[in-house]
Amino acid sequence: MRKSKRQELILREIDLHNKVFSVELSEQLNVSDDTIRRDLYELAQEGKIIKVHGGAISKSFVAPFSNENVVYAAEAKRVIADKAIKLLKNNMVVITEGGTTMLELAKMIPSSLKLTIITISPQVAITLAQHENLNVIGIGGKLERNANLFIGASVVNQLAGLKADLCILGANAFSAEEGLTDLDWEVVQVKKALIRSSKKIAVISISEKLNTAKWLNICSASQVDYLITELDPADRLLTQYVDKNIAVI
Image 1 (cartoon, rainbow, N blue to C red):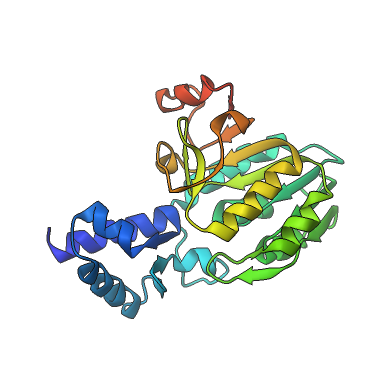
Image 2: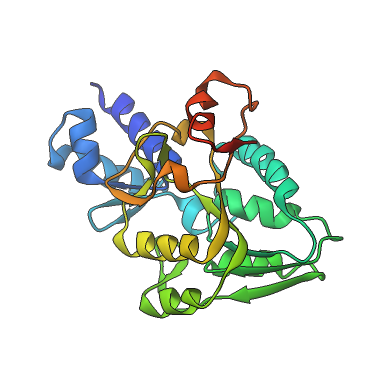
């Protein structure tokens, strides 16, 4: 495989999953670890990604407020955000995490809605603060810089005393067989705590992340109540999720 094509595929993986590990890319592209490390170094030098220990992350994921960063699948994420708003009702208590799709949702919440929204994302909290009728509560702890989320035991402990009406989670990977999965151990523990603290679970995800899986499980597909993508709910790709009794929106 030519370097240009390989780096194109690497960029797509980073855009799609926000974060990648060198080992995974090496296996996926069938090249050496050294080749992947050189590719990631070159892409970082060109300002296209952020190199981190063991892999790389998307610039838009870490700094979505920057005008220099182009959000991947931005239009699809706006469609998803618009659909997700239909789940929000006055006086609900909603728990969220972060991510570019959640930020789109935070921007689009109607000014007439009166909600309490609890979030582990400082970026989402700042965005939500623009809405006068929202009661915004941030759950603080150690800041995971590569995801811009608060993580750690203090976050998990604070969430343990809550029972929200709805939890809205982004997806790194989601499949009917493997459920919701991710690749960061501490982030996964916090997402599990978010799920335990909620009556209903909604997963918001662009369709490209469906039928994919990472190595750490967050929850099974059967634990998810709603799946919101940019696709028409009748799309054949979503049939397997309907079969798991998930309400597809």
